[in-house]
Image (cartoon, rainbow, N blue to C red; front, side, top):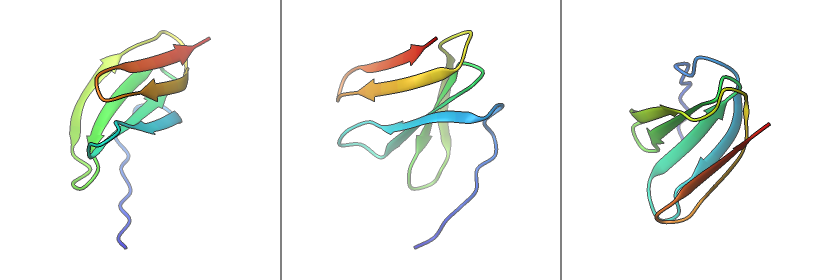
Length: 70
């Protein structure tokens, strides 16, 4: 097993999740930014400024992504 540190999230990571059936990891931070990562390469797939406050919750299915904040 190999571990790799990724330090491109601009603020503390507050939530992690996955898209079911895909190699996509989701990370949300205290700054309200949601980032998508490819699990194998840890390459950034994109980002969305979802909230003005910390993302505290995350849920997904094969076609939708939901985030929660304060």
